[in-house]
Length: 468
Image 1 (cartoon, rainbow, N blue to C red):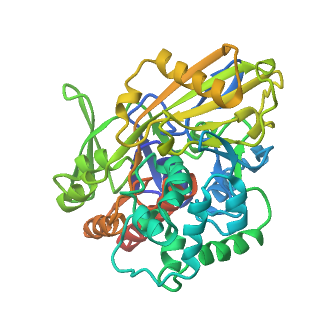
Image 2: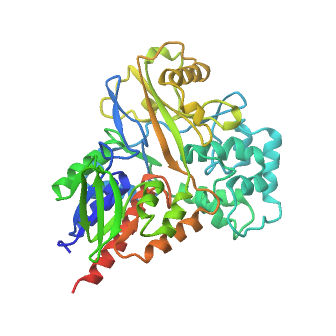
Image 3: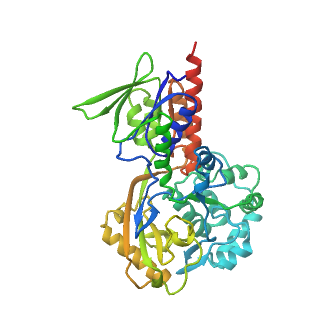
């Protein structure tokens, strides 16, 4: 196997994970990343003398793949967990506690729902009908909004489910696939009629699991790909940046990639290829070889977002920040969709300064590109106005940073799982080719690592079949 050469296109977490598993199988591996640095949507940089993530900031611990990879890399000692618990929702004009017992916005405790004030009394009464309402017919995939509104009412969708899922996909619940975005509830909906009852089962199952729900690294989640690149280099993996792959085609022995400029192209041969890039670039590379997959990949839309990070003197806050932050439903008509109290959430970060408060605000949903086209100064002003309203901050920040993520989050529209099945069926007919990344089975780090594992298993099985 060590004579076989596998090229991984894409140096985000999915591509680096694929390279790790391939190298552990004894294969010769090259990673080609088109941008100047590895990491994809994982990136960390300094603000006010402290390191703060610009992209994804944590890994969910309930799915094991992310933590298992970190352990295999020997980085478990760098893991830290949130120093605060609980988040809020800005609803009906003020910050209110997230209802206890909710699972992705689906309530399990109607009393806690009513006490939170997030939902009106009429909205709580409507949600309660779910316990007595006749079963909602389940056939093909439907949107999250359609199914949840039918069971619990539109207010639950707008003020609980939308802000929670909006933080994951920056998308629209009226388009988001129920099967792909809420798979546990989609499965339960086929055997029981009540979403509240399903939420109670999931809540009780989660209660049996101990430990924090999230984790990150002491230097930020964005340090993970940098550490991985160093470890991979020691394992003999070649990791190249600014190596944009422009063409991919078959050869009698395997695959040929063309990278570099049109004036000075570089050709590289491989026994197998793993495409760990977003759906658009993957589709363009497969347009000639696997047109059926390319056509389906072109149908996956991406949303854009921006993260504005601000640093304040701790004295700028008239009252201490509580919890990990808050979410803002789109029905509130505000540009900011979420704020994370980073200094409160991650007090064990390396370099943490108790005299400085760091916050991150997210802006941008699908269809709100006009907001993201404003200048850095305008986005900063939006977030400052938001914090003045919700946290009574009257001082100017001592530092700020704007990170724009164009086309960052794949949209799992209704029918997404069927689309992914068609993509994989088309690729299955081509030996030595596999896909992985956020476009398929989930956008979080564990889901991306899982797709990398599956892609590597496919490649290894096929290469072993070719051995004498």
